[in-house]
Structure formats: structure tokens, C-alpha cells
Image 1 (tube, rainbow, N blue to C red):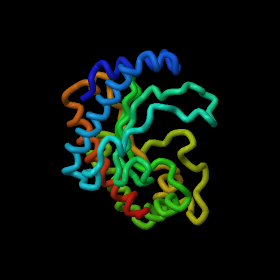
Image 2: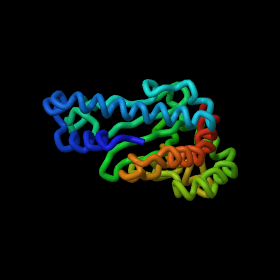
Image 3: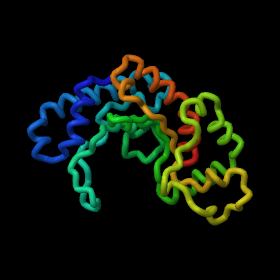
Amino acid sequence: MLQEATLKFLKSLKKNNSKEWFDVHRKEYEIAKADFAELVNNIIQRYAKNDASIAELTHKDCVFRINRDVRFSKNKAPYKTNMGAHMVMGGKKSMLAGYYFHCEPGGNSFMGGGMYMPDAEKMKKIRQEIDYNWEEFNEIISNKAFKKIYGTLSIEDGMKLQREPRGYEKDNPAIEFIKLKSWIATVTVADDDLTNKNLYKKIEEAFLALKPLLDFLNRAML
């Protein structure tokens, strides 16, 4: 679980997103950063018994920098107002489907994972895998535990084609999932849960329900 001070820092950063403020409060950031790193290390150690592919990871392999890349963004705020970690074989830059934990107090925290916006080659392979193994894929996303936690896959703006991809027919039973450009599932984490000792249990349950989907997606790409 996280400390209240970590949430307090992120809330303050959201109100004071400037280098000047950050420099003054750098000690608080370092404490929050260490707290989140401890959380990620504990998640890995506790969950690795269910998925050996992440057993050798540490927080350094998974946690994203708090600095934003503002070169091509209209939003010039220098810092993210969240802390995130992608736990996946090979680390956050491996481009495989993996687990994700996002801490952003104010009702914006979530956990889950999957494959977000893969390149054209990987996207083609995933679509083909869904097409060839539709019954298996449908069984995964229809599983009782998956539906209880996630409901269904996330379909946000820009994450789905308007028309079927070339080579696929409209009446394909899997077409709505073949049209996706990302295959991810997420569930919200309440602020109170972030500092609750039961957080690890909730994370393990969510990740376990997600694992069959990750295995399916990575099988397509490897």
C-alpha cells in the first residue's frame, strides 16, 4: 500500500505543476518516489508466483519517469501528476502485453493492462490470432472473473477503427475486437484503496483475471 504523503504530494503537484515548485519540494518527491518504488517491488515479489515472466524485474525496469515530454504537446506542464508502472517481461520498453498500475489521486487511479497501440506488424498478428482463435479469445473475455473485475475491454476514443480492416468481413463474429487498435482492460482504484493494506490482494485478483488475455496477446506477437 502507499503512504498518505505520496497522495498528498501528487495532489499538490497537480495544483503547482512548475519546475520552481518542484525544486522546492524535491525532498517530498523523493520520498513519494521511493514509496511507489516499494509498492511496485512488492507487487512483483508477491505476484511472480503466478507469472514467472516478471520475477526478475525491479521497479527500475517498470516505473515511468515523472517528467513529461512536452516537445510536441500543447500542454507544457513539465511533470506528470501520476506515478505509473508497466510490469512486463523485458521491462516497460519491451513492447509486449503486460500489467499496469496507475496512481493518480482524485479518482483517476486504475490497474489492469494489455497491449496499447502496437506497431502495424504486431497489430496484424493480434488481429489474425483473434480471427483464427475467436472461440478461445471470446472465452477469455467472457470469463466470470474477468467480467466481474473489468466488464469488457476498454474502448476509448481513437482506439477502434470505424470500418473493418482490409481482409476481414463485416459478418466475422470477432469483427468488433478485430477492429480494435489496443487490447486493454482496466478497473478504477479508489483513493482509499491506495492506502489500504488490502491493496495487494485487489491487485493480485485483478492481475490474475487479466493473465489469460496477456498470454493470448503475447503468444500472437512472440
